[in-house]
Length: 149
Image 1 (cartoon, rainbow, N blue to C red):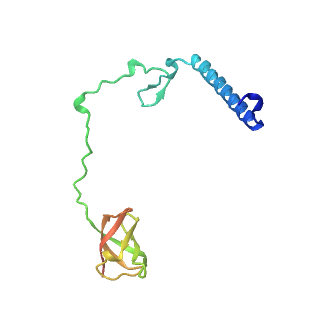
Image 2 (cartoon, rainbow, N blue to C red; image 1 turned 180 degrees about the vertical axis):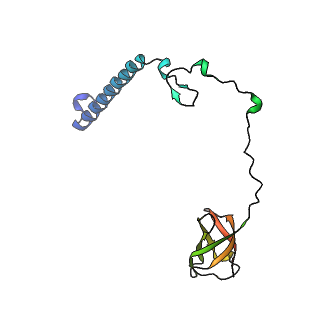
Image 3 (tube, rainbow, N blue to C red; image 1 turned 120 degrees about the horizontal axis):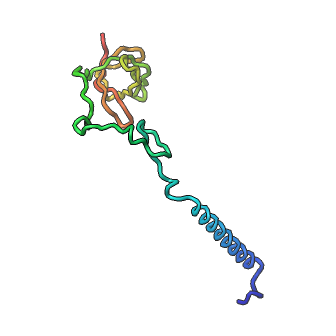
């Protein structure tokens, strides 16, 4: 089909594509010109003696010699205080119908989820209970929950 027989819509589509192609070429040339002004030296960053990023190289006089034997690559040793897995807390919410609730840990003050399947005795809101903390599907959960007398 010759161009004289093209419909108006086809001509418009062709003109838009041509315009878009020219704009894309213009942007590409502009980016190319901008890239020539920046050099790889402008992109270098240095870390000073305090661990901060700077544009100037660090002063060689401020370098410290560190012996490889002094570098510790492990977790720090913890105090030999035994961790007590049995916790105490107060039942802040418990729904008998749905079978779940929350216990506020008296030591850490965080809320721990409790399910009815993990109860050794029946509990109500305001009861003081002892429990063990285990990791549940969505976070810490109480297990082996029983009333304190």
